[in-house]
Length: 368
Image (tube, rainbow, N blue to C red; front, side, top):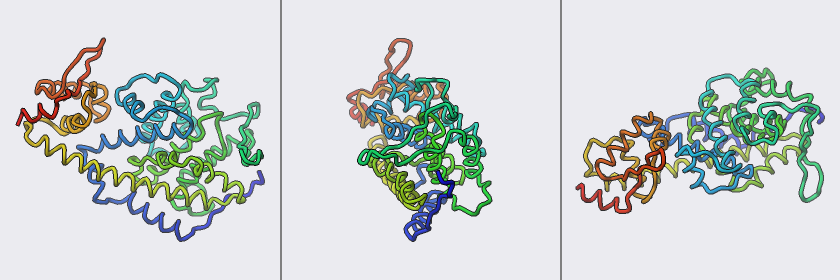
């Protein structure tokens, strides 16, 4: 720990990526009509937050299938193991980030995000939201090939001051010069992981704060991106982006370039997903075109999904969660589909579920 500042170089590829991301993530582009349309926007937000919660947790070792994790979050089922708990916590943290996007970052908010991320998952519950102290062991990063320390975090005695400096920097209160907003968000990501404020959960906290910074800086499309999905495809490259800064004397250029490319690829993923969703929705709408006009966009979304998932179970809670409506509105939606014999209502314990019949295609054809 020499106290020397981190540096970076604005290379041509970085400038190009920054320009593209700024144009796509903060402007208005035609393909994003689905996510700007109030009739479908909330459904895309929920889907993206769920995906980010799952893949960010998998980066930290969570082991479960995406299908099981998505069903758990949509249905509001309690987590059954540590991996599912990590995902539930990450989802709660991502939702909190969206809520505080317009607030300045403070050490207390960082600690709150950490508490959400690790809620019920630490061996010592009192460590949640607590910056490490000099009496606690700091965790160094070792190279598996050379068995040498490649990163030793700052002394615990420095952390309160460093956390305050991080917040000042994130809020743009640092007077040491201008930094483009995209690079600021990535630097917040890097420094949270580098400083290692907490006993565990630093990576998940860092990625959550990156999302806060993107949204805070006006990159509205970040709410729909799942950056961790790209990182999870090649976790070794993600770790290498941190370590190269350490071994290159504090040069952040590789880290910034790598993550700008990740953001750009996540935007491409979103565009592909939206294009695919439009195609699927149009196909479903073609099948549903003869249904009575009393069905609203939420009910049509259920039927579009149901056509591809025979036997799937919906609950009022999952439907309300997916579309951000009240449980009463959700029940009304599902009851109407039951009355039309397009879903089957069953009672399971204290809860009602709505099941997709295996012959839904034939039932829709019968209504023609």
